[in-house]
Length: 344
Image (cartoon, rainbow, N blue to C red; front, side, top):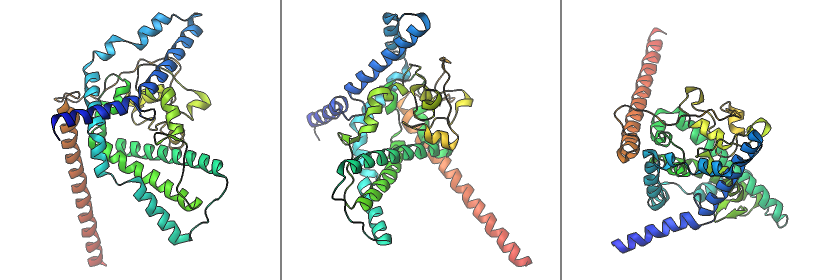
């Protein structure tokens, strides 16, 4: 690929990311989210002070101390990497959702026989499929996130996302490439498995309400509060809704440096999985002024080396230690069984 072709390819990728309605970083969803933030902050100020100072709200939204941070520029670098290069990498390495779906459907057909296709009820079927696949995405996201916070070598790959010491919508792209590949595998398994179940159940490919291939429920979330999860705006959901939907404040707690908040609020859109599995932390009404980031001596977490090379090295080391530990445990168990047979 020559230089001109490379430039055109990169420009096309960035244009798609910014201008596609279904993109997770479209200018439309960003504008919509910030309108929600502006209204929410203005409403809170009016409730507390009896009036809304729109100029103060604007200063809070466009804070200069956010974009001047090294952490923000690191997010920009990974945004470029993710948008321009990662789609090709993930596409080459991750098993496709369609492959998993076909495998699951074939297994169900073999076990229970095919189900006659539905010739009616298209709208209810499409609605059911939309909700079912959205729930599959959500549980897949939660399981992936839970494992990355509990398994040491996966945590080393996921940690760069938590090294951001200031949160902006660009922080959503602050992910190690291998971490993204693991995420792709997890979603392929859950969404592909759910698609296979639906295709077997309805006797045809599952159709959903979507925008540019993205589930309409997820797009609705993205266009309202999704971008605000990685932001400085304290918008908490409490009570019933705080147990159902992860507000921006829920996810900001997840990024908190406070040890009390570690491994909390692991979901994407829904809070119900955290509620069910005991990892839910309901945010307080008042902004606690959280601090973010992960401090490691001798490592600049905002450099390309600190975000890409160091996590891979540490993950490899953690994986090797785990394998050695398992091997030693297996040897000990085998020796114990042999000793028991001798004395038996």
